[in-house]
Image (cartoon, rainbow, N blue to C red):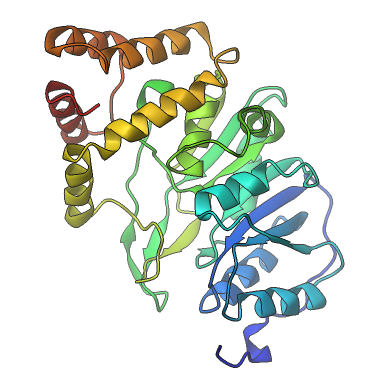
Length: 323
């Protein structure tokens, strides 16, 4: 374990302002290298009524020591540290989401190695506050890509038209950009934390759209998404990433994912809109049919990806029974 220096800790933090309270759900695991920068970017938010709930999945480096230093420096209640389930980052985030002791007006997922722009929460809340409280609402955004030294290297893909027929086969935004309301959280609480989904953020996108909620994809980047060798999940827009997706598709991994997603959505079947329940059923039936009926049911479902190339891959997967 490397020696921890107090220089890694940011300036003292003031008292929270008025306005909606945001619970920042931070998953950590061996994150000592960039964690302090991530925490400092919370302190720099223009919306200051927030609290951090950090769930650590068994770090053996200085991650817990860094969290302890910030907790001591920040006002009481600003940072709480929990022990994660130690079953991977998806289980860690779902455990945080479903933790009944965490109560706020809105919830924001956070990785341990990014840097939030100062207005990230303010932009999210401006839209979320426009949605009725009883309607599931999910804000997400584009990201500015940076390397390990915080040098800009590009942007994440710019997507639009969020919808359930897309969510079944594609996630359009990183969890590190997502902020959601209590109505959206209630859907994940109903399904429970022990659910075999691929990614927590993809699952949230599916649940909110499937149950008739609102999703807004902000084209303005709201964080600096650090790309480095230790990323568990990085941006997936490079040609290498596309090749890896195709390889997983032909190996049958996507078919397993889609099956898991269908099973997970059955836990929310009573909450799905009639239209989306029909989309789900048509897609589920397509996966079990022979070639021609499979293509017919896929077309009837309306399931599609965000790009032409993605839809070509989806059609090819249907032909070769990889859905």
